[in-house]
Image (tube, rainbow, N blue to C red):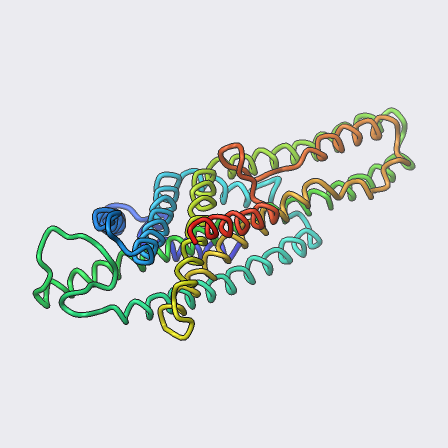
Length: 379
């Protein structure tokens, strides 16, 4: 959960998440800062769209501009998700810290810490990869700088920026928009992955409580009078089933909150990967421009892979685990209840978007195949 707190701190610094407890003048200043972040991102996107040319244009230049435009559009969607869905995201985080999701003993703490370690590893590896990729891409753009004539990034502006002061103000605006969008893009990806891993931890805790419940029921069957056994069994089964239902509902709620982000990222990433492959195939491998495209490509690969991996882990963990428990030795009532639970658990928990996109490792391979297919068509 510490990584989740770090993610919200970074989102606050990026201007899309007002810190809790800020009221009055603090809130007003922060909302003004948030306004500048959102406006700068939209202005960058609009200027990039207006600069696109589809007649007598070099394909490499077109795809270069298009890949950056799509990445910024994806970041804009993530900004909207964080700002508009603030209440929903707060609900998810707060719910994970309450009963029945709160850990009850040391064993459950160990399970939670195991997945906290996974979240930490993803946080460090993805952050370093993204920073490295952004640095390479930004360094490659420095080669096209020609003050005061050529800006770091392509864009149309309704004024003459040949004046040095105006030029550097415009270039600073572009760099500011790019960097803030990159931070939001990076941190929201990490937040989604952290929430998915937290859900995986809850699934493991659910399995642990199921096995502990069966052991307690065995002891009750041996030591308790028959008149009290049925009532105790119903109460314990009901408590576990309520936890199971709450977990499924929370996963579905989380899926609904981030479904638009998942859909846009899936589709945009497919196009960006194929455009970058096309650009790299038409660029000298020994140039800084090639290194910039390569850094961009690795960042997009990792961006898609880490979410597909976390969602795949959640799906696989949620459909297994109670079959190896020693439940056949229990009473008939318990066995009937367990069969119903097993039937419910057999239906996989999927992270989906728009009915046809399912986050999984198989989906990741489909993205790679789709990108390669589009690349072959372009070539």
